[in-house]
Length: 87
Image (cartoon, rainbow, N blue to C red; front, side, top):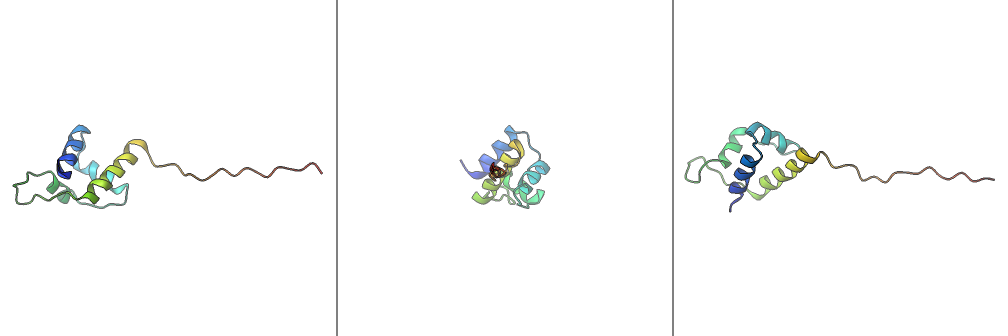
């Protein structure tokens, strides 16, 4: 199964439109146009077919996690105020 197949199946299963996928990719600062995106969903024998690389699929999956779960919370430790001494 190719990256294009995985991308197509996720798009159908999650009922995502091209503009939604563009927004999901923007969540991880990855910019792509709808026409570039459309090339991944074409048939392999189409002249404008483009192979989906690992980087694009990885960024989509990372953006999808943010889209579905929300942004990752900060892992800053909570500072506790210093204890007062009874001098």
